[in-house]
Image 1 (cartoon, rainbow, N blue to C red):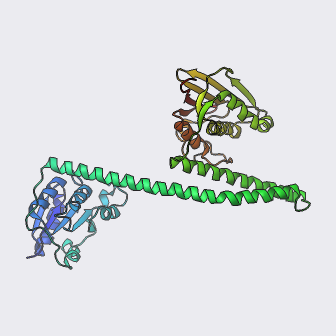
Image 2 (image 1 turned 90 degrees about the vertical axis):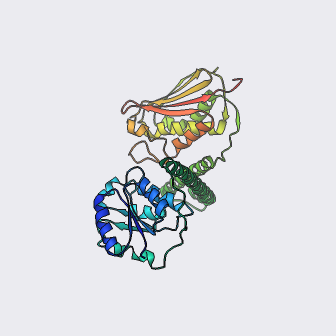
Image 3 (image 1 turned 60 degrees about the vertical axis):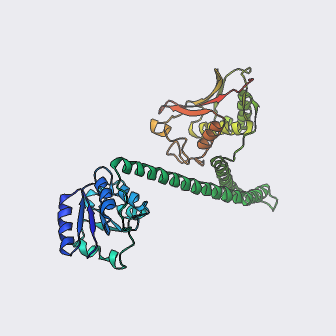
Length: 395
């Protein structure tokens, strides 16, 4: 006797056409009109092969296939997934064929191109019938099927998340290692360029000096990128340790502005400090908070025109201290505001120096301090960055 075939499809036309072809070829045929009926039929009749439609009511073919392949009593029954090119727009995946094999299916057919389904399934029986239990497994109610499917999806989700976490950890370690390896050669290159510029190796002509300065700027940019990548890798790996102690944000702002004295003069920028000197301290890592201030102010330098005004505000708010860095530059649209803290995102389409990592790193540092950061802006009306940090006990 020829193997028994289960056709699971919600299309009466497919049942009639494929059923007639299979029965003419001598195959006994069982029919199921939806995913629930397909599982019940498999458990009750133990067919030798399942033709399983992807799109069906109640539960789809992907879910049916995963559930059946997870059952040790029936996992060996071949499953051939079926779909139509006309239903591709309904599919939840971009490549139904590839996804069918990913979930454990043994074969795949396009219902629109197959000429004779009886001929298409022959390869699945050339190696002889697979082992099946002699006694059908225990039937399942719809609730039991849904519960089993829920447990299976939870298990798969856990495995997927674990695998993604492992891959992400490997990526972070790779980025950190590669970035670290770049530091030494970049330092050596910078050192030689400095010596060339100072004339240590001989007199330098004006064109040579300009070339050395241009290369030095490129090296400085690469060094900033490497430093940012190392910081990012540390943060993502949970290895960035904060050295917390009382910090005066007002003094930190003054210290940061002093390092940008020449750039501020060059742009004829007006700096307004809207805070008093008797504000309470916060408890944080001074170096990392300085990094936040630098990343915020460097955006003001890059994206505002000459003679712009940048205002620094500090205001106590219950248990927090609120920092605002506001400029009167071109501002940003709402679309940009949603993306500026994304990695490698630029806040304008203009070509500017930068890694696209400054704001994401600033956000991560603020979050590590149990704080919040966001931006407020309107196109043509300037941008305000707001950082809220807890003051800590005894401040």
